[in-house]
Amino acid sequence: MPKISVSAQRTSASLPADSGSDSEHGGTSHSPSPRTRTAHPNLQSYRASARNQETGADTGDGAAAQHFRRAASPMHRAPDIRSTETTSAAERRPAPGTGTAQRRRAGNAPAAARNARAASTSEPQHEAAQAGGAMHYVNRAIDTVFGTVQIMWRMYVAALAVTGPYRMVRNPGDLISHPKSTLFGITSLSARIDDGIVRQAKANVLERHGEFIPADSACHTITPHVTFDSANGIDDNASAVRRSVYGKNKGQPEEMLLRPYAQFGANLHTAQHEYLHCFTHPHFTNSVEASRQEIGIHEGLTEHLADQLPGNPLAKFSIYDVMKLPNGRRLKTAAADIERAVGKETLQRAYFSGDQDAIDKVATAIVNIWPKAPTLTALDSIGQRKPPKRQVLAECFAGASLLHVGQLPGGWTRGFLPVSDFAQISAGQAEQMRRQAEDARKRLGEAFDQAFCNFAPGPQKAALVSIEKDLMDHWERVL
Image 1 (cartoon, helix red, strand yellow):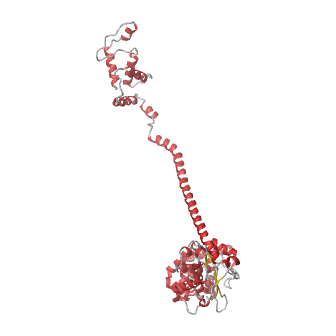
Image 2 (cartoon, rainbow, N blue to C red):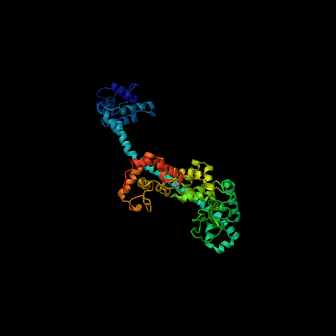
Image 3 (spheres, rainbow, N blue to C red):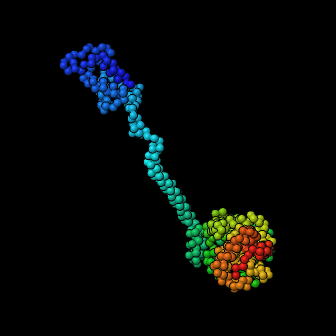
């Protein structure tokens, strides 16, 4: 209870009960004692306010009376902190029976209700804050990309301004005879391939792999042509090695064409890549030709070997670094996996020497790493089996093609099936073959893939013989 209220109680106790009426009739009050003060005309309402504060009742005018009393009291000074805290506590004390209602009005509701109100209010604000934060990071990323592009563009313009005039002056004949190709080479920051680059490329290949390259390799006699001219079967902007495709010289190199400008300074790398193609042994080339992924295997292995030769690291980046195989592997990554699987020397003996045992190991690794697809080698091997087994093996060959490639083999069945062409197999029959091939692969594992997808005759035939009995026992003829 406030100190001023105690003082008021003492004053009221020292006055007559009818002091208020004496004042009204002009009477004088008793002289105040040192412990009292002169009665105020509104003392009755003041007393009532004090009594109401003690009981906790709310008369509606208690606050006004208390304010008036404090203002009129000569004892009133600067508020005492303890007195203010006590008064605030008294004002907050609820009347009997009204505590719960007052607490709820004051925001002191049960925790569940408060949390619900807070959540309903804060969720939109939280979502807005998250959206704003996400946009902040998006804008920063856009600014970073834009700034990087600007820097790269300025570097490109600066490099073009420095190298462009020099290239025009150094090779004026190119601009006169082939302006389109020359300007494209200049704007793409391409490096000119000349005789010095050609000699260096050949020397680097022989230094790294010379011990595996036969002395009688036809590539030793090949003189590369650095030319803008078109060539039959070769893209106008591509360098390439032309090989014989018929007769006893099948697979032997016959001609090497190099385009004068190699993009992004890759003149040495391009020449080395083509020399690796040139020194590839014909036996390896002809073996890979039986695969349904001949180009991918050749280019992947050749680019992998070219990256190991001397040259500008930036110039070694090419389309092969981002090109992906149907199974999701990157082309150069798959080529590196082959080398890890068989060993570097085995790969060199297969690629440059044409060693059959090494080729068999590389072919077996390719089946496990490259996308799987049935080969003509497997169909040739089926033709060597006895007639009662040919239909089962040929149907399984068709099922393996459906399983791995998603379509039937193309061409004629060579008399292994009652139909003359694989295209004559109906959709229902094809589904039966695919389903049985899937079951056989689950039973036989890697041997199934090697039997139908290996392009090397030795390991392919051995795998087919190993699964032949299982197929004869479980396969139900479809045709």
